[in-house]
Length: 484
Image 1 (cartoon, rainbow, N blue to C red):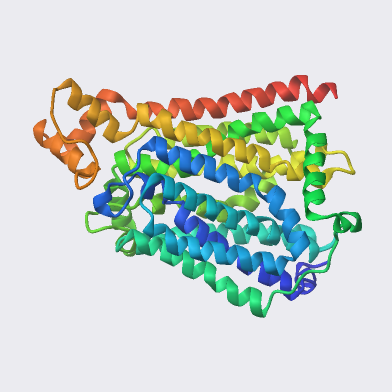
Image 2 (image 1 turned 60 degrees about the horizontal axis):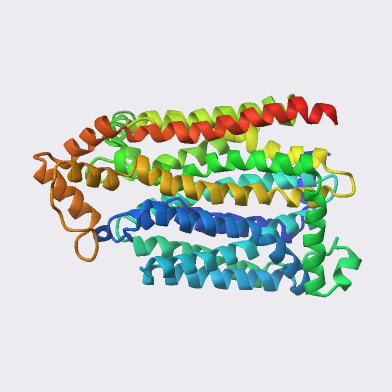
């Protein structure tokens, strides 16, 4: 069957679902790519001024909650219907994005982010389920290919919009995401139709409470397979390393990286793009640099998939995790913004090799009557990875690499007396005050701290976690899977 004949077989709801996914990913990544910067940035720039530890708690626990909650929300959506669930999800999304700039305290922001995660968890299972229910054996492969392509297109567009609007105000970041997600109200109201079921009649007859209990019971049975549970725990190491891309790398770039090098390179070879992306200080914002990852995936995912399809999923996973870990390490080891763009190519190649193979491998090892259950459990290592990533990006980064912490350490050594950060005295005020009292410019103090305290050593931690995960997966392949 030709691809054109396949495309004609998809109903309207399939295309509407994919468009809604595009806008949702646009809204989500438009905010999430810079969320770490918003949480930890100086208050005089409109950010919240939280510590790295507080950032790690919010992003780690909140995002872990997001990936665990679909276990429940999936059952809820089957019960009340997909359209109603989407309305609830979009309402939560829109209201929380509008509310986010209002709250400034740690506890309030934490609570609001958990509410946002609830909206995302309501949305998350719906589109994948809709794609499943609007495709068949002949159209599902291309259908899910379209779905994953749309995810990356949305993830690519969002940060570009964010980068533009946050030059004016942090508030506009959240308002832009609210506006984008609110557009989905039109789509779900006018064009989305409840897809025809493929649900189990037995499950539909159960009460919601019993249905959720049944789901958790099945998950318990799946996790009783110790080999499968061991695999999930090992893979959580990959996600711990991977999530540093969102939780740590934006802050690292903002604190330490000289992006003027990248601006000058673009200005020499592509002046128009440098003008569009650059600031008046001839720098490039972190989200633009990080967005090359989504661009690489859009350009090269099919090529990488074609290359690794000839290898066993576990072998491709091991190689991918190693390559991604090296790429992430290189990104965290330099002050050169242009080098980070190259390092992220290495990271994205590893990501493209490993991430899709995790689901494929789980599908292959699952008993034939438990495939969906085992694949559903693939969210567990993502949740664990986010939880551990929050600790690494929080406490560990705070002590090894946070610029303000290192400045405070140096000020203590030199007996420099400065007011505590808080109220009207911001992080920027502290750093500027410390530089002045040390007889340096802020750029000179940044370089001095870099040379003396080696904040780039954080890359050993992140790369080490990834290499450990790959090594354990290799041992798992050698001693567990080959004995099955």
